[in-house]
Every structure is written in structure tokens, then in C-alpha cells.
Image 1 (cartoon, rainbow, N blue to C red):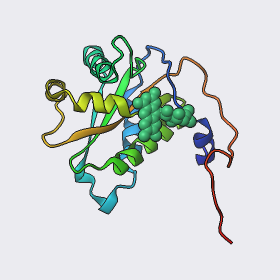
Image 2: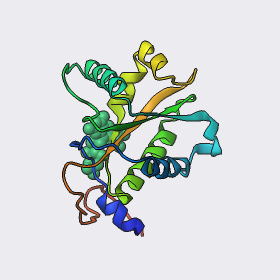
Image 3: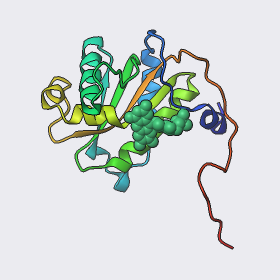
Image 4: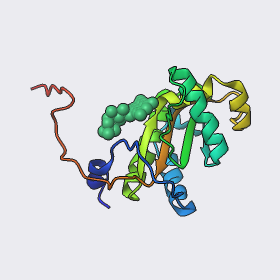
Length: 170
Ligand SMILES: Cc1cc2nc3c(=O)[nH]c(=O)nc-3n(C[C@H](O)[C@H](O)[C@H](O)COP(=O)(O)O)c2cc1C
């Protein structure tokens, strides 16, 4: 797929089928994350944790819903795969780059995905859950990507310059 097509296809998916993604798809998504730019090339300051176990996903949903003050909400939208992107030096910009690369790769693979900040915060604030998820010592989840088969077909959107005000200086 052309990059421009993946960019046009990428959108936040908030409704997923229960069908799991394949190991081959997960591998491609994780490789895209690893290809992201990271400040100073300090990849060792980053860590990713992939969660696909339904019981753990349930606990993550509960932790994020508690943080949002909305018990019963499913902040991961019940996507079958959740990738937590962590840093040991507050690398929020790095985490965003990693998530966006994976978001685009998911679109390229015909999968739905969504960037989740609240879910990462919900996990980060629950030390028992952090232990259960085996988040490496000193690392904090800063962002996450939920991935799965979208319940609705992916649709390309027209690309526009109207959403972000831009000033092109003479
Ligand atoms: C830093 C960041 C944090 C976000 N956190 C959440 C989130 O916690 N939950 C959610 O449903 N969407 C979240 N989103 C998705 C945005 O709401 C979404 O990207 C935006 O509304 C634009 O829609 P689009 O992705 O479909 O183009 C986040 C996006 C970014 C970049």
C-alpha cells in the first residue's frame, strides 16, 4: 500500500470484532513501532507490552474506567490486542511516534486501531496491575494502541489542509 493511502485510511476505530489478529500482523505492527523515530536514538528508554489475555484486558479496562470515573466503560473498546508503550524517561513524544507508526501499519494491514492515552494512564496509576503486566521496573506506560478487526469497513478519507491552521511565511 502507498503511504498516502495508509494515511487516508487511518482513523480511530472504536468498535471491534472479537477475531484476534494474527502473529504475522502483530509482528509487522511491532516492527513499525521499532522503526519509529526516538529522540537521541535512545530506544533502550522505551518498552512495549502486548496484552491479548482477555482477563488482563478486562483488568486494564476496569483500571482505565476507574481513572475516567466511568465504571462499566470499556476504554479499550474491547479490541483483542492492546500494545502499551512505556518509557523510563518521560518520553511522551517518543511514545507518540511509536504509536503513530503502529497505527499506520495497522491501517496498511486493513486493521482498525486507536491511540489510547487514558488507558495508559489508568494502568500507570495501578501499581498492582503494573506488576501483573510485568511492566519493566522504572518504565511507565505513556500511550497505547488498541488493535483488531474493525466492526465497520475501513474507509479512506479525503485529505485536507483545513483541520490545522497553517501559516506559510513568504
Ligand atoms: C495523544 C492522543 C491521545 C488519545 N487518547 C485517546 C483516548 O484515550 N481514547 C480515545 O478513544 N481516543 C484517543 N485518541 C484518539 C483521538 O481522539 C483521535 O485521534 C482524534 O479525535 C482524531 O480522530 P481520528 O483518529 O479518527 O482521525 C487519542 C489521540 C492522541 C493523538
